[in-house]
Length: 73
Image 1 (cartoon, helix red, strand yellow):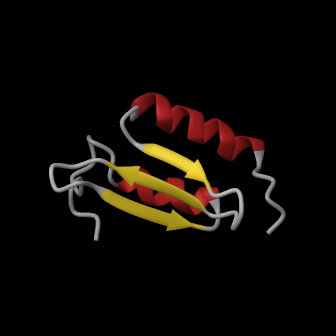
Image 2 (cartoon, rainbow, N blue to C red; image 1 turned 30 degrees about the vertical axis):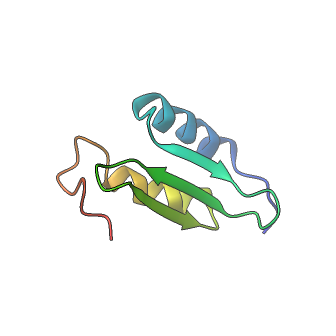
């Protein structure tokens, strides 16, 4: 993994953050993986992926307008 994300994925990340300001998305500086915390009444869900595109693909399945919201395992 090079650590450099394609500009299209960074743009996609910005759009996701604008639509979902409560979801925290960060990159671990030491290991290089991407992690998202989705707050919920039970404390929330953490998703971890090594590639930003994979994390965004998963997150977009669970946006508030998506029928699967709250069903992340």
